[in-house]
Image (cartoon, rainbow, N blue to C red):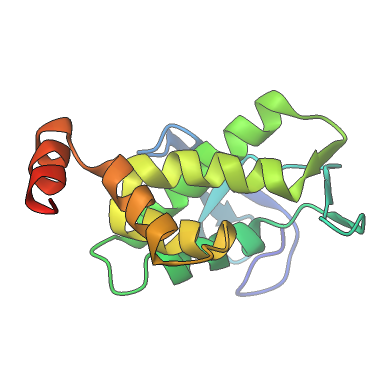
Length: 161
């Protein structure tokens, strides 16, 4: 890594700490030339995974695509950037555990939905409505009902009669 102040490539690690998420490491570094101090974060990165799209097109896995989709679903929802990063890391962990080499975009979407359902139910419905391409309001209604507790479902059914 190059020093952001002087550009020299030699730094020494002063301190290392596991991130609050347990999935990253923060390091405090000091440049050997100018003594400038900087913090870095190391995270696990998925390498060599190819995503197979519905039309058969293949492209390298890109974290940014998942992050962009989640940000759209979480738009104006009360979530922090740190919680979003943790969510992405959990999704990527599941992808890495289940797949090597290739994964279909459908399988990635299913994993995202599984995590998003637990993370934020409103964002889950937003994501699911696009991902599953709800054809009409009845499919949307069924998905919302599946999220409701059983006691609420009984009230909803009896009030619609």
